[in-house]
Every structure is written in C-alpha cells, then in structure tokens.
Length: 385
Image 1 (cartoon, one colour):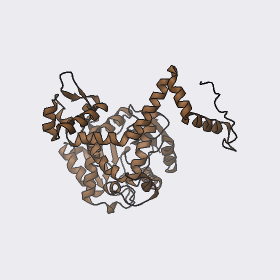
Image 2 (cartoon, rainbow, N blue to C red):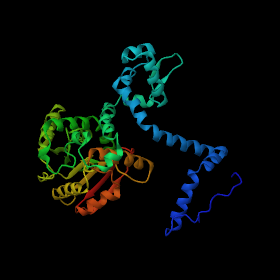
Image 3 (cartoon, rainbow, N blue to C red):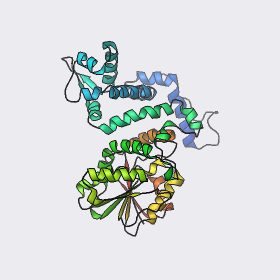
Image 4 (cartoon, one colour):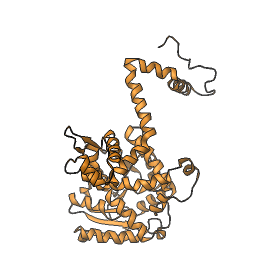
C-alpha cells in the first residue's frame, strides 16, 4: 500500500513444522503488529474505521480498571440515586456527594464519558441509559460494590495465577470448592446469600423465558439460597410446589424468606450438603442456577451425580449459568468469569460442550440447549435421564 510488498508468509523464520494455517496466522500477526502497517491503514479511507475501532478496543482494555473505579465512585457517592428521579445542578450534586466543585467536575466528566450520565443545555445533569439501569437495579449496584473485593485480590494477577492460597473473595464465597458443607458458618452464608438475592432477578427472568415450568408438579432448586429464584418461578406458576436444598443455615434463612413472601404453604426447605447428603427425591424438575459454575470439575461431577441419583425417568434437570463459547457475548463472559473464579479459587465458565461432557459422565443421556435473550449473563441447558 506504500509501494513496498508485504512480507511473504513463507519467511524463513516462520514457525517450522506447522501447517499452512498456523504459518499464515503468524505472518498476519507480524504484519498487523508492525508500525508501518498501522500507519498505512490509518491513511486509507476504507480501512481507517477498522484502525480506529481496534485502537478504541485496545484503549478500553488498558483503561478498564479506571472505568470500573469511576463506576464504583458513582455508586458509593450515590450519584445514580440522587439523579434517579430528576436532574440536578452541579451545586446540588456537590452538596449531595460532599465533594468539592473541582473533584465533582472530574467525576462528572468521567461518568459522562462512560455514558452513565448526561448534561442538558440548561446545565443540569441527568442519568444516561446505563446510569438509569444501575439506579433501578439494586443487584447491579450490589455487584459493583462487591467487585472492590475482587479487585483487591487481582491487584497482582500474575501472583494470583501462580498461587493457590486463600483470597478475600474465596473467604466470602465460603462454600465454593468445599466438599464439606459443614465448614461454612452461618454468618458467611448470610453474606453471600444476600448478594445472590440482589443479583438473581435478571437471571430468573432469562431462565423463565427460556424454559417453561408449566409441565412440572414440583421444582427442587439445588443451592437455592434464600429462594429468590423459586419465588420468581412461583409468580407465573401458581400450582408448582417449591422445594429448596442448601446448606443448613441457608435453608433455614430460606424458610423464613419464603414465608415472608407468602409462599410458606407451597415451600419445603431441606438443609444439607450435596456432597455429603442425598438430595430429596420426588421432584420432577431440578434446577442448578449459578451453582455448577462455582465448582471445579470433580465437585461439579459429584453434584451432577447427586442430582442424577434423585431423578426418575422423565424428570428434567435445568442448568442456568454463564457459559463460554465463540460468539462475542460468551467470549466476554468467559474472559470475565474465568478471572473472577480465579479470585474465588473455584469454578469455571464452561462451554455448553464442556457441560455436556460432565452431564454424560454423570449418567444423563438427553441433553439440550435453550436460547436466552442475554447470553452474556446466562445460558440454559436441560438434561434428562
């Protein structure tokens, strides 16, 4: 493009002993990474847009942590709550946040750049679309606050990759990676159950749109926390019996929570560990909602075998959790969750194919996938014996 022919893919220093595809990939990467190629592309009108998009993507990757801190500052200072119902002047926002005008101006500029807030011509500040979503979804705000813990664990990601020691995140999710359910104390169980409750609504909506529970009599939610998922299912299926199995302190809290929701007559709770105790029998549908992904393969397989042992012919197991894959949503999910689970010290963002392998090893034969509207957040699979 500047009169110089590009390097041949058959260069002498190309990877030896590799096929044509690998050699072409190596040549392509050398070419794209060269300063000369990047300068040339930036001058060609038809290619300039691609160059700019790649530059923005790389900038976002490098700036990602700073962006998360802008988001966290907005949540901690209750900026979204302040702007939830109306716009505010900078004077009013300074009073609400307790920031100096100079510090506030810096935050507003950053938040506007991330499309969290917007400024109207009269000088007042309002929520933009992304800020409105956070303001009206307490689960998102709770996860933003929770991520401060995860970021502390990821301050040195290389050290975290090379070590196997306990982390702040692993102490929070005390059950993850534990084959002994009795080791989780009630206080920690209450903390993670509360966070799961706040972040469960969106997942429940995705599952309900992907799978119809109307054909079932009884749903057993394994690792069901405080019953938030069951309560969401109950709204559209008034005749469905609701069973919940979780660690004893969690199950006790779920019994109270379900009674407070007016669902006591439809609900049975069972306390135990799915690694130590058999799951209750008699439900014709079992669900694992964001549970399997929390565990490494040996524990996940043990859990699936426990579910299989509690099922009869015709019963259905529903699995809902973030899943990896080749499309953009699933690739982004995998990039995020693999490092989150690294900090958690347990679990994987598995592809549907990897989950299928575990299901077959546990004795399931009829395995299917369900389409979800937001695959970035969750995928849904079903399995029958």
